[in-house]
Length: 211
Image 1 (cartoon, rainbow, N blue to C red):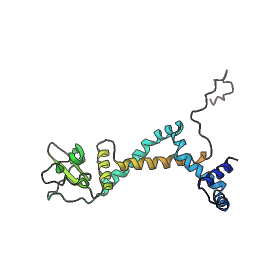
Image 2: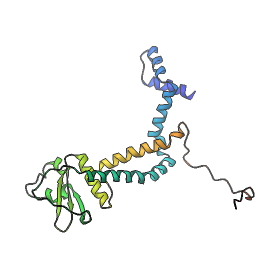
Image 3: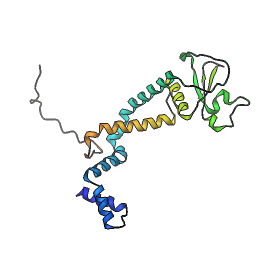
Image 4: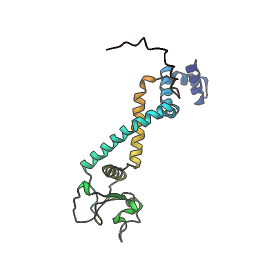
């Protein structure tokens, strides 16, 4: 009866102009289709805010972040072609990297004649600082590469990956992982709180002693 009610309500929300259109909408909203819609809405809305799901997300999140971190580090190993800013070529051991700065904090964005007035260039600039005066300056070819490299370099330094790309990847992967883990609970109501723990029995004579 709940499914039939939902079929009717969902068909009416489309505002059919005739009875034939209403019947057609009902035919498209089969029992299986209603279950799929329910599952999708449940996973994307209410259940994702319930206490058990929030605890599961908190438990899974470190694994997902580690996966993203490894992907960023692998991209650093693959390398990227950057715009040539000067004729000198320098190599820096990773152990010598002190910090990574971005945007207006980059040395090459503070220099006279730099393209600091260009907002697009400013948002793609980052620098590697490796001693009191040494630095490697970069302008990423696009926003995606900028996020990959700043995330990867921060990961190397043991810092948080704070780019929009990481947040989007985390949300996507976390959502997919939770949906996969909850597949067996389809159409089962997840309680907000665990059931109460029963009282201990008066004795444990029923326990089998393996020794």
